[in-house]
Each structure stands twice: as C-alpha cells, then as structure tokens.
Image (spheres, rainbow, N blue to C red):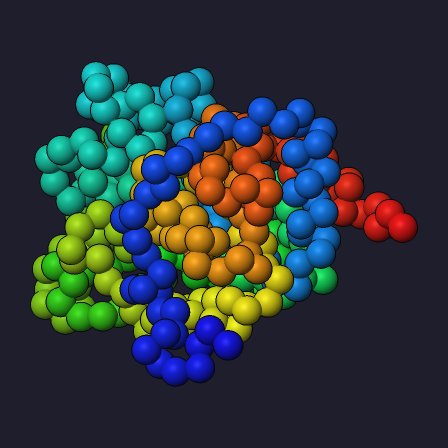
Length: 319
C-alpha cells in the first residue's frame, strides 16, 4: 500500500507542486467519444477527487464584468471613473481606495454579489448528480461556496483560498477568521456614494488594526482552525483513495494558480497508475501525452460537457 508509513503519506504540502508536464497535447478524439470515455472512467471509479477552478463558476453562469458590472457597480464607476480598474469585479479589487470607508464600500458589495448571494448552482448540482454514489471530495480555489449551496457537505470540501463570507486581521496577527455576512448586509444598506459609515469599518479585535477579506493574496492570509481541519480531511481522502480506482475530475482550472490543482493532479497520475485524469475546460484541457488513455481532456463548453456526462452516467451501464 502507498501510505504504509508516514514518510510516504500525502499531505497537502507534498501534494502541491510547481512541476508541470512537458508533453502537453490537445487530444483530437471526437467530442462524443471523449465524453463517453470520461463517463466510463467515472462509472468504473470507486473514488472521485474533484478539482474546481474559476471556470466552473463562469460556466455555471456567474458574471463578473461587462454589462453585469456596468449595471451593478455604476455607483463605483461614477465615484472612481471607469479607467483600467472599474471594468470588472476582479480588477476593481485592486483599485487604490482612499480610505477604509471606501474600501469596504466596494468589498462588501462585491462579496455579496460574487459570493454570499450568488446562486449559479444548477450546473453544480448536475455535476454532483453525475458523480453520485462515488466516494467524493472537492478541492477548490473558488471562494463562492457554490458547491456547498448545491448540496455538497462542507466536510467534503477544502477551499484553499478563503471565503467571500469571512474577514481577518490584515496583518494576520492571530489565526482566526470572522463571519462578516451580516456586517456586509449592514454596509450595503448604509452605503452612500460608494462609502460606508466610519462606525461600520471593522477593526481587529486583538491588535486594533485594519481588517481585510479572508482571501489569499499575500503572506498574511489566515489559515484558521477550520482551514486546517479541511486540510486534514483532504489528506485523509487522498491517502485512502491513492490505491483505489480513482478519477481526478478537474473542472474549469486554468493556469492562474496551477500549482494547487492542475499540476498536482498530473503528478498524482504519474505516480499512481490506478488513477485517471478527466480535465474539462473551454480552452485549456491539454493533457500530458505520457498519461495515454488514462487522461481525457475535453476542450468544449463546460456546461454542455457536464450535462452530457450526467446523461451518460444516468444511463444503465452497457452489458
């Protein structure tokens, strides 16, 4: 067995890697055959380790820029100009807000729209239905809680990059994060001209300093007790499934933070021949040629791919 001793145990730290495949290919198998092969691998698997990136939320219908941003963030465009920042939610997060009242005016609004109140769960539910009956765990860089809203228990989720629902000391002076949903709603009600009242600006209860979103952006990101508990559950799952027939099902993962899901999934497949990789992406589903038939990379509309997979997996297994 792979993990007979602690020296070989897969921890999250050992799971992570910056080593990328040097033999990427775009598979030229017809789409229908790719989906059939992917469904077959999932059907025959005992376990599914699901890796989800931002592309999953986008495929499910989440909007962050364009007309949606123009409509929902017009107040901020009026206050700060459209410029290079006020074009989409991501870019606007880097705007040099002049004070805490302005910063939280934006971030509370953004957190509500992009996470707390976001509901693009139908596609997430379809994906969960497709892998129903399998031993399942989710590793995700998303911070919007859509899989949890879709019905996946929090105990089966490791969200490594934080949450739109929580805040922390900006300097990470203590390893605790705080649920800020009700505070965000109060900020939303009382915001005027893109600013919140000074009395609503959160301060660290320990050092008295400023607070920030619990999103991984620098070395001050707080990994609290819940984060470490999820890490332990992830490690336990990977070690249990490393010697079983397992599919690494990757959805919407690009090259923004590939060292968390994409590269580690490839590494696991290289090291364990009983593992298969199914990679779904609109345009980045290249796979290592060295994995041969154990890898399926489907470059297509993900909503359609997930729907087609679900249909096939609901069908009776052919004799």
